[in-house]
Length: 458
Image (cartoon, rainbow, N blue to C red; front, side, top):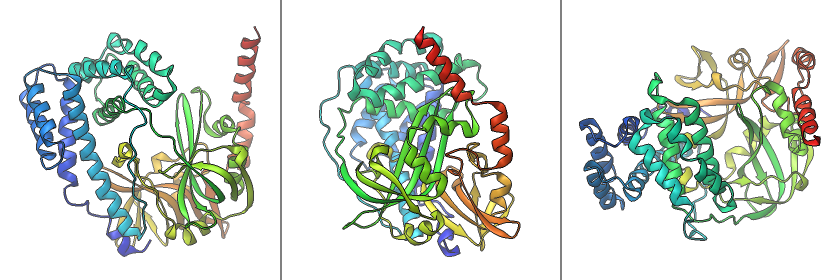
């Protein structure tokens, strides 16, 4: 990326700040709930309606705001408010993606709308009722009883495969709220995050079973890097790469594999939980391409990974892929519900920069680097990143502007230019000190599996 391109990202597109202000006002209104509308809450709802006044949602949202302000709070009214919030964030997402595509000189596929395969399930009505109770009580009013009221609804949703997406979202949401309850005692409420989850769950409850139509692709997958997502009960490895298939232009794709975990499994040990995806892990650890045969690919660029349909092939340097293939690769379309700034993650390659005060400087321009997001499951460290000379990372955005999340770097080690990637330890730590410490602490995954097997045998 040249300095002039980075300069194109320094200022937020017109209208972004105003749209985010309207969203933040609504999110703040949810903190204390909508049972009794205060003057600030009334102003926030009016601002939300004004922000979508020029859209097809205008009449519906204005009517919903009017009813909510008089205490008539129903599922239809709350759903209209959620739709307005999602539409504003979608507009922000589109403006930012257009800015990034222009700065990087990239092409992107257009989303093709497809009708829902079925009408919304009656089971989802229970989730809307509970989400309505949340909005009325507000985050400050959430206690263990309100969280527990969702248990039966979540259990019913989990039993229906067509509703699994909504069920998993609500299951995680209720667990997070339960762990924080009583929320009235919290010093700081994550208003944006919880409003995101509330909005997404409410909108999902109105959707029928989603189309699972995929195309079958064969060809060569060139990994760029892996972004590790980890918390106490789950780990996900999201691999970004370029797909080369005969008769088609190169495309950017993602591979996401995940596993449940316990909070005692941390660091390099989390890779063992993903051991069923041996070919993928081999390609990451050994910097190799993957030969795919009839692998399902969604319209959003996600490969539905089946390790039996892949084989680790010849060596493929991710930095070469990022330099040669990535700039010409077609970016995937974005699904409507994923049009949110939080989902932006554009792979890019940078070189010839320097670090100062935690920011990467390229020419006269600066961009923040997410040093606090480096995973413990790989060899990247803050010191290693700030001492690097080239980087593959994800271009991301939050209210503070654009940032880079490192996936791989190259830096000099004893005068030799050496590459370090998040996926280098996919088959086990390659750093002798880390490997020794890992061996000394014992194999937590093997111990837990043995204990689980013993319990099952009983």
